[in-house]
Amino acid sequence: MRRGGRGAGVLFSLLASASCLFSSPQPPPSAGPISAQAIDILSAASKVLSRISAYDYALAGSFAGERSRVITPERYVDALAPDRDAVIALKDRVVTAAFTDRQIATPLIAVADALVAVQADIAAVDAADAASFARVLDDVATTWTALSDVAKLVPGDELAASIAHGAAWRVAVTKSPAFAVQTQGFESRDEAVQIALRITNVEAVANTPPWTVRVLTSPDRDVAVKKVAELRAEGFFVAVVDTDRYTFARSGPDPIAELWREGAVDIPTWGEARRAAFIAKGVVVVSADGEAFSFDDNGKLWWHAKVASGPTFATASTDGRYVIIGGLFVQLLGSEGQVIGSPSRLPSAAAGAVWLARRRVFVAASQGPTGKPQGGGGGVVALGLNGAPLDDPFPLVTPAAGPALATAPARDDVLIATTSNGTTDVEAIRPGLDQRVRAVVRVPGQVTDLAVDADGGFAIVVTAEGTYRFAPGAGNASDTLERIAAPARDVAFGADGVLYLLFDNRLAAYDRGLRTLWTLGLRDGRRVVVARRVIVQDGLTHVLAVDPATGSADELAPVGELNDIAASADGARILLLADGQRAVIFHLP
Image (cartoon, rainbow, N blue to C red; front, side):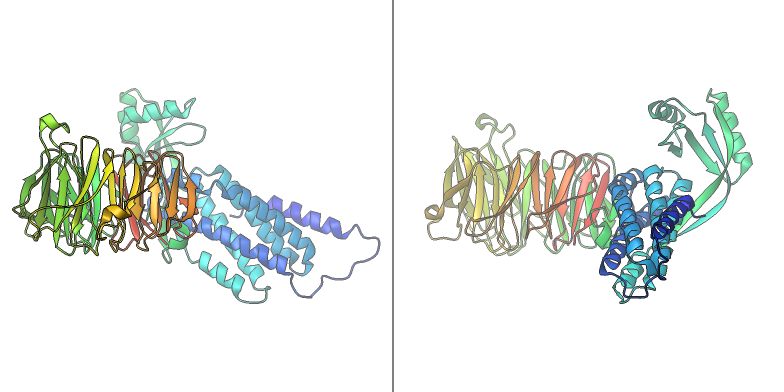
């Protein structure tokens, strides 16, 4: 049933009254061309409605129990909150157009009326309530119909194409009688939540007064009556309520252009998940207890393996066929779950690992057992694709403070930065070829980060004294060394050689000549990862996707307190691991 009919009557009355203000009879509505302004307004309405329909598509998937391209009810409400004012503004513009373009006044008023209903839905929706969501779908469908009717009177195909695009996402709603077990209303939602926790297994807690708890919904009244008896025996005041059961089935193309800021795949993980990586045909997530699970591209569990507890990194080969997982022990896995070789031990939990593509080896490193000279040195190990560690000169012994590692696809060596007595030495070695490391540059301060650009032309080393750039392939790299900034929190290079320096309050992008391309203000910059967009962790939960060309940022849907960020080799996807129990994959434009 359409709602907002009274709004239509009021709007039509206003239009009719305006025509009576003239002292002489007015000519019939003009059959002249429709104004460009009216067409622009209708196009804007189509775009806003397309966004709402895309989110309807995602929430319907959540109700249907799907895992791909879904959102939570809470996210649905938050994401569409800004659209309330946009819809109201569009309604006002449509009414204005109805006065200007009298020949299409009636269908324009129908659009305005439908927009009023949609705005009311967005403002009042309890997205966790299927009936409330069904009303939204009904009014959105009515608005698409109204837009389609007026589009038939508009010249050209652009508006019709826009409407066809947005209306392609369809949600079929089926309603059937059901019986709900529901509590009394409580004075606050917090009180209702506490009751829900005591009951343990519930379907939903109301987001609007009255603050009730729905325990279950069944098509069988006897099942509901039995549950009521059980809960009343435990002291809960509940009753059977006649209601309706809604099911939602969605169809249409993947709305990636509208929903790329939302997770495309949402995967519940094993508890205390700590690290993740993309591998061939899926992802791998490893938990604090060493349980490693792989999921395919649709979020379906693929395989399981057990590695040593306490993982600190998961690093995949460029082709995704291998992944190395490490902490105190470093273990190689194949992309189909095979455990390859035996674990290699480091002096302490590994700081990280790199994949050296030209040598077909992984290199991992850690500080000493205590990080202090008296506790013993750090170590660097290299593993071949058979899982066996390379021998002499590996494992390398480093100063106790431990090294930072970096390499690039164009290089056949790995850079190793270590600190002794307040000075950092950057050295290089070609695993499987060299018998010793060679010196590259020396900089003051304790090392915190190291990175190399894709072609190996420039490298960045960050210490407590500053951020330094040098050319590792130069005959005398020390001659190229220059301090370019204060100590950065994180550094990364784009495939085009653009340098990204992350500080607590900003992200800065520099070209190869160190000219500033743009700067983005932040609240608490923590990590930067380069994919198709530059991914920035700003605080515990806030993630931005930054356009590398302009520095403009889009906020990704919040997923929780972040444990890890991973990017696919092609940069098309990123994974946010959050709350130790959730892996969310985003598809980037």
